[in-house]
Length: 170
Image 1 (tube, one colour):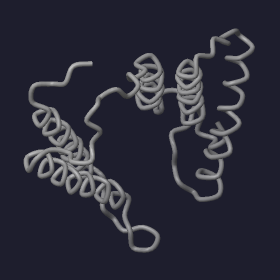
Image 2: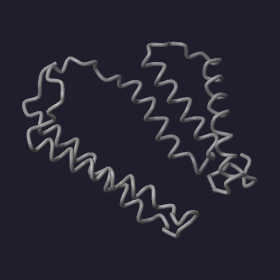
Image 3: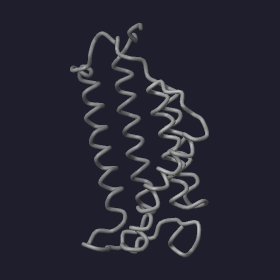
Image 4: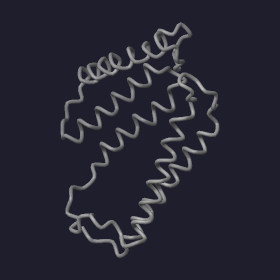
């Protein structure tokens, strides 16, 4: 693997990427109502904490890259290559969950996210067991995780999550 001509440029771009993500999250936090709920904290509190944390981290990353680069970074560059197929499976799961949660409900969208993420992890391990029985098992496990979480939030905590029906059970 060849070393880039200007590694500081790539390091600065990473910091700018984190900065843009923090700004995007802060922009999204503006649209969340700030009415205080339980404990005096509104639903926009956590997005603001995360966005401010990302902005602080971005500032440190950019400062570090412009003042001499990431000093504790391994010079050799002989590390393992990224496993892009696993990344694609995981990304597909997260994006499908975000796109479908209001359409098919929390339980089914989170189950789909789980199934796709598990496929990414299995492919990263080099496992090729992708028969129908494996997909069914992963689906049932994902549903066994997502359904109790949904019911705990909707039935016991009275927090509305997107459901497939208006009953609060699916």
